[in-house]
Length: 462
Image 1 (cartoon, rainbow, N blue to C red):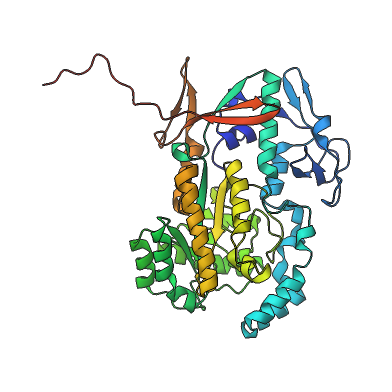
Image 2 (cartoon, helix red, strand yellow; image 1 turned 30 degrees about the vertical axis):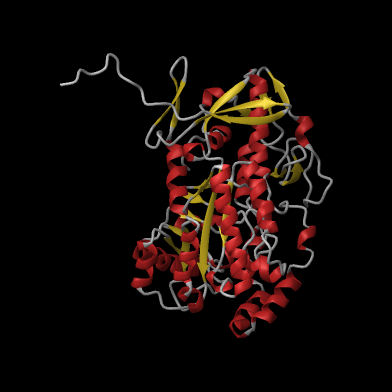
């Protein structure tokens, strides 16, 4: 994993000496389970003394009162690195939660799926997803458990050391308030043929999109099609191998397929991967020869594979950057919720903007051809352009997010005595930020770009 091991230093990119080490119990004395950390975070892991719950149903035991500050150290009843990894990697789902397509019912469904009309598929999906909105965890419409945990731990560290504020490297380049990313999963020949029009729509709002392409069986992928996307400044990523829902069924089959997927990545000039139907198994991600992966939802209540990574920030899984899907997909919005407004999207973007996170969208060309759906998508583009122009949101391609997040992980914040300086490749885009406590909560401020140093005396003109 890139960057420092201290979870606070890794998340905030602040110097190790500015954050007090967090002291977990050694070893935790219970089996893993669910517990709360204040009102905003549901966690999963082992506790020192009390037993966590076997389900996330409230009320959960809140461990906030069990945290102590002794001799300038924060004493925790859990291991923060373990808990953060459990959420990001969806370990709370267990092995069964990653075996969606291996059940008998799932095998039957995927065998007959190509023969089912869309209306029948919608009906079956709605039956399976009934009561989705009653699930307490991850929290709909956006879950910030990982982000809230980092914020609360930094507050505790500041209280332990008596620091009024802590310097760190801001989350996004040029001091952008948040980030928005548009991606388009191309599922059929009709969708492939609509991509030129879709690029026109994206470009009309000054937003570039990533087109994830299925290499085999669904449709032909001529090199001229790939070149046309690159030539217009958009991006190509690999979307599964054949989108049959069986990528992660068996390890041997996965290894056979991933070798072909990696080869298609090189052929397409693609640096990222997304699995069909957002199926995933983070334990196997080390086999991908890509820079980034984008199959893990923030909240997966409306997806075939449930779970969610509970963060709105990219994170590393080994050397692979995970760019999570943080906003509802167009298919779920239109076909499961029967909603052709952008109200849910606006609600999610407002929440993510308030947390300075990543707004990550999947809009399929296949599903926005008809006028009503296309109008909804255009309204979303207008909203994102408005956020870019009025709220300082960075609209970026996934390759740009990947480049920045890797640069940020390698940058160093150096104490120069009377000031802090950011050093390393990309430092000209980075901004110094400060975290402080305001009314019991963490507050941020971002410094403007400093002018380049001026030599003195000035050089003599020839």
